[in-house]
Amino acid sequence: MQVNYTRRINRPWTRALNPFTDISDPLNIRFGNPNLRPELINSFELSHLWYGKATSLTSTAFYRATTDNVTRYRRLRDDGVTEQTYLNLARSYSYGMEFVVNQDITSWWKANGNFSYYIATIKGDPGVPDVLTQTNRSWTARVNSNMTIAKGFDSQVSVNYRSPFIIPQGEIQSFFNVDVGVKKEVLKGRGAISLRVSDIFNTLRFRINTYGEGFTSYTEAKRESRIAFIGFTYRFGKQIQQLQREREQRDDEGMDDF
Image 1: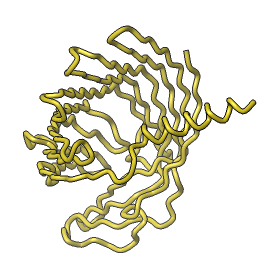
Image 2: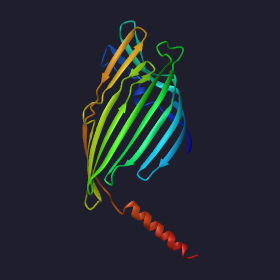
Image 3: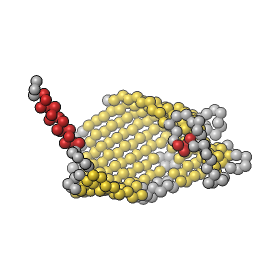
Image 4: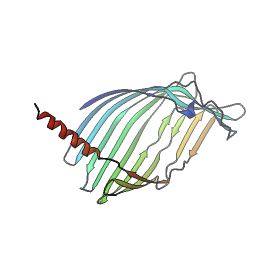
């Protein structure tokens, strides 16, 4: 059993702080807010760990509270143009359960996955009518499959899903993607060539429903996500494990002097 408490600070990212106005879409202008405060997150967790012969399971109950949430905020002007900026608008709370499983299916096939189910509540700023208090239930899932196809030749498939979840002015709909990668050791194990393709089915897209005083907005964004990466790594010097063994051997020899 484990009990854990963490306090984390999330500082605003560059785009949220940038005060210059983006007018690439004259009907929907955007600008940042250099006066943003950082988010503060307090997290409480109670975990149970179980280890079997080929399986390990971690189950966690958690509660997280965030203050000064950095939030995208959109409003409709009298001339019909919408403005989007970033404000410290809300507080949020979430609690739920998370499960992490590691499974050795065979000697050459291993898998791991995690599943999280939680209830989230966003409490808006009373001075901003567009940001209301709302609650919803959401879940996320991730599965990784690792196979050793042949000696020194490994493959990995990763599947990710996130259900719809709320934001202060609306909801972000579910999204899903699959990544695939292979790695081949070369040069007697000192080097490796890898190939990875992200979002192989080209499904990753973000669909956002936004509501405000006098308007309803639907946004669909599709980034370039189906990308292939080729890499080569080479290990110089001695392996870390070998250095550790030599250090332990020296320590043991030193003990013989006493």
